[in-house]
Image (cartoon, rainbow, N blue to C red):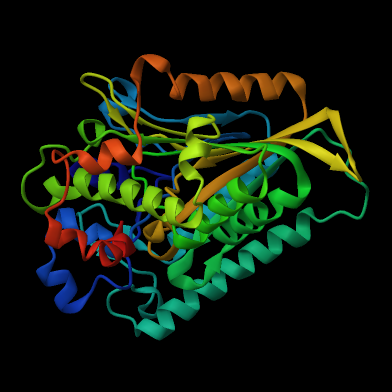
Length: 384
């Protein structure tokens, strides 16, 4: 904070600090710092330099550049995307505290003070400003002319605490449409904090059951690769909770698909954990490769890849509590498809990939929550 205070004293520098409107009163007083972030925080990672934008899931601490596996994309010479994130930052900043040179915080007015304002007033102000900005962007970029570009870049915002659900709604829409749109589909999903919502789990199960040519590849952080591994206090149980979340997902899949073992043995379902000595795993993302259906035929010459790059872990906390943003890239360009596959191969590096099955995980006693805590996992998932 001392460094930020010095920066705030420089000409042309504004330091804004988002604070969840839910972190107030007795909740704010009782929850320790490592726990109160579950109430909600600013989780967007976007860096804008002139017409260049870096989007990813990484903060800028040392370990992200040395011993933590993560993702980041650079979008060069793309003024509309740079304008979008510059504007988004301005909107969130206007609803946040501003850091003064003396280290104190100040809100622009009482209505935008997340702690002192009336909760309903603040939420409505946040929702109104953010929706107005997003509507303005859509209006400015809408065009009646036919789009023939090979690549589409679409920024998405998720602020479920304020009723803005672009990212989650579009993701579910695409996943639900895949069985009818694609002749075949390969889906890759990774998260260092694997805890997908029930709706997303249902979509993944439906894809496997309805398309016998579909494949699902999951990559999670091994408990030892979780950044909270061996932490003190309550946070020390976080790696176990995410291991339980993976087990619960595989159990749910097994109940929905009686032939799940056959699907796994056929290679259509692959589940692995990232384990690399001395490293942590923080990558998150989704890749979808499809063939395109036209009537009863498949156009093999025009396959497409979709990938989501950004801050979301696709869980309830990302959906309902934090501020998130991802960029959806959809392309049929051969060179870009190859580059996307190459990036994915780095994350799915066989040297650090440990295959797991439901049977293996269920038999283990290490890195498991106590039996009585497993009963409250559905409640824990709401803050994971």
